[in-house]
Amino acid sequence: MSEDILRLEPQEVWKYFYSLTKVPRPSGHEEKVRSFIADFGKNLGLETTVDDIGNIVIRKPAVTGLESREGVVLQAHLDMVPQKNGNTNHDFEHDPIEAVIDGDWVRADGTTLGADNGIGVAAAMAVLASTTLVHGPIEALFTCEEETGMTGAFGLKAGQLRGGILMNLDSEDEGELFIGCAGGLEVTVILDYDKRPVPEGHAGFMIGVSGLKGGHSGMDIHLGRGNANKIMNRLLYYGHERHGLKLASIEGGTLRNAIPRESKATVVVPAEQSRCFLDELAMFSQIVQRELAVVDSGLRVITVPVETPEYIIENSVVSRFLHMFYVLPNGVMRMSDEVPGLVETSNNLAVVASCDGALKVECLLRSSVDSARDDLGIMIRSVARLAGAEAVLSGSYPGWKPDPESTILKSMRDVYKAKFGKAPEIKAVHAGLECGIIGSTYPGLDMISFGPTIRYPHSPDEKVHIASVGKFWNFLVEALRNVPEA
Image (cartoon, rainbow, N blue to C red; front, side, top):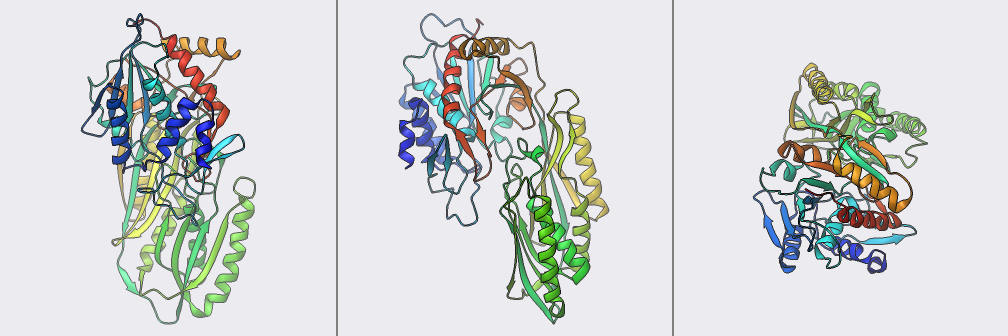
């Protein structure tokens, strides 16, 4: 079924995307795709370099007569987010992605597809391999570990790039040109605990939250979808306050930049409270399901008996943790005053885990206003301190300030209108595009971001619109033909 993708148009893009689905590339484990891309460039006879971080730069000379055009850097990231449904057996470090055609879309079978940013990588490969395209000097920059910290963009050194224009191929709405993005900050909250033996007369249960849509913590944060960690905390808090619930372990979410879809916890309750606990938890679960019925109708909450664990987390620590988590901010904090409909500041309570004697919460904060981003980080750290926890702020990266007077923006806006009969929308995005980081190293770089239509990235529902890939490719080809003189 997946080989049917090779017959889609434009074939020169889809064939490379298909080849990428066969190369494992979860973020942080990109050795195979790095070798694949480096060999691709060398086999074309093009100048190919791999830096110490793992970024790849492949250079292609201008066609005859266009040597004086401004050099263009086509930029995309190699890695993908490894998310799968709970009932899907898939090893992202070894197994290929099973892509299928579903009507007007291409999606994967139970996993993320990797169209983010595989379509961008495939388009850059198609440009490099083409013998017919008209263009000036080209550099393809393939960055590493974008999804888990933008490691490649942070590690890019001054002098590695020669071009004056950067076309980031990592946006997800065809017909929109992006000229700005949010910056980000990672916060890790740590609350140490000691183990205690389970008191006599307690029964063990596993509580599971699943079936949520999840999604990209920047692009989808405004949709109001359920956060599995927040829902789990409500359930645990309810059981702790009403039925003497004690926590043995908890695990929810997988990545900072993905809205958590699933969470599970092992708990114990006094045996005489078990029946009442289960009945009231089921009732409370229905309340949460009704709250999210419109935006996340697939929510499932299960509670099943399990063997009583040997140890539990110190109860006073659990109490402080549940109270702290209840008030930690999640979702949209403020909308932009300058750009209608754009989220300015948000937080994603992404990962919760109990391991090695500590309860940990991992957050990803985003904001197009650096001071607001930092203020939110201090807010979370203050809440943590009140609960006796430590909060570590790290991985701060800048946003990308829009430049409405950009030369490449004017050129590409004119190209789009001439080719498709309408003007593209000019936007900023509440996501951490690498442009902000690369622009801080190359302050004179003229940058723009665009791509095909991708829905539900960072979740197993991820899909890319087939026709939009064709428009994206045709636009890219024409934009390269019309790049201004240096």
